[in-house]
Image (cartoon, rainbow, N blue to C red):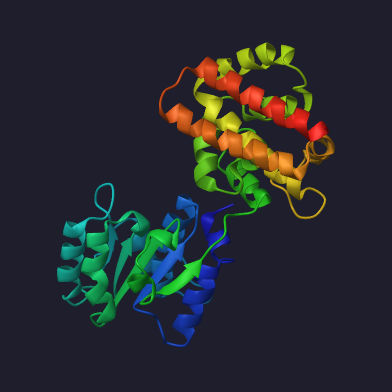
Length: 322
């Protein structure tokens, strides 16, 4: 399954194709999605669609312009940042370059990735260009969350919001790229391909899911803590994945039976957990698990952190039974 298939069903494609058909392309779009893989892939496909000379559905990914973009040989398409995040120097370069006419087409397209991470100074520097854009210039800004983008910027761009993919779509995509246990990796990813790519290189995801379910179902007394603690410590670098997995499972537990869940194929375990942990208790456990990340950031003793985590889960489960 290729990214083009997802794009052709996306809101981004719907917006660009409509604007093209009406000959009303905006001078600036902001593409928002929690998944960086999606924002990077879709922004390129948006550019292809804008330039595409093919017949029928666009982007055709076969015409001269589509091929130039695919091979990073399109002189009128510029992608930023050049290093980590967009800074003032990037914007100054973009503003100056935007004043020059396109060399090989009707448009100059600038893709600015992770614009929510751009400095406030950089965002302010591009504001005037967005207010009075040069003819034939189109900006495509990407972000994981528009909350960090200045309102003065948001008011001058056309906003496109994309959800993460469905679990089934992620499973198919991962399977097509040869990822092992693609169904289990997809469950843990929550539909986020960036997460899926990171998780796929870790140890057996199925083992992590099984351990997370085992803890939530069968951690019943303080005597169980030593058993589970040793298993968790053995995970080493995959400990954060276990925390992520338990958080995702508990969120699914609250949803099972009413809406779709991420852990497709694990519904019987979700129902079993729901029978012994109330929705309010799930919220409390998730809150405690989120705090674990802060402790890991400070390089605390891993055994102490794990034992505290298990004690917190045990306490909430005990209170839930009262």
